[in-house]
Image 1: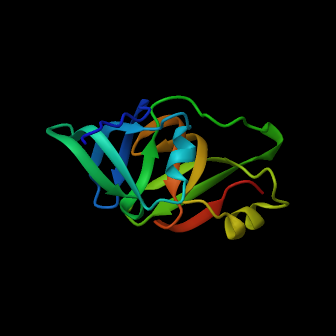
Image 2: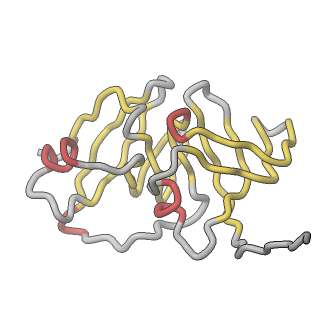
Image 3: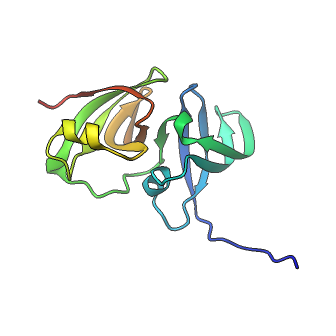
Amino acid sequence: MNESYSYPKEGKTIAAHTIDNSRLEGKINVAGRTVVELVNDETFDMIMYDVVRNDRDSIPTVLLSKQGVAWIDPEGKAESPLVADNLYRLKIRLSSGESIIGAVDISGYDRMSDYLVQYSDFFYEVFDCSAAGKKYPCLYVSVCNSIWVEPMDA
């Protein structure tokens, strides 16, 4: 018997910047989650669809390893609520050679150093940031592809 299964689909557009300096713009199925929940879930890969690579090649579907991603632009405002008293600016140098400057919310941690050492998700959620010569309200920056992090607040 052939039964067709339909799963909930809710596409969100993102731009994933990879460690080989490719840019993949397309959709991911968040299915009731936020983008930050999807990128930080326990899976090691993301499926993107309706993808355009480097503004020229169209690809219907891509299986993207989270370990190969330097940073993700969720193409919109931050999804997480911010606590202004807990925002600290930092500079992150990535294995791709890029640097990202922005702020992280260290709520739940006593100090910035505690946040950096104890943070356990795949991606930092960085707010009010700049990368690749552009400004962004929010980016998800790879923890495993961060070469160094420099706190900018004294």
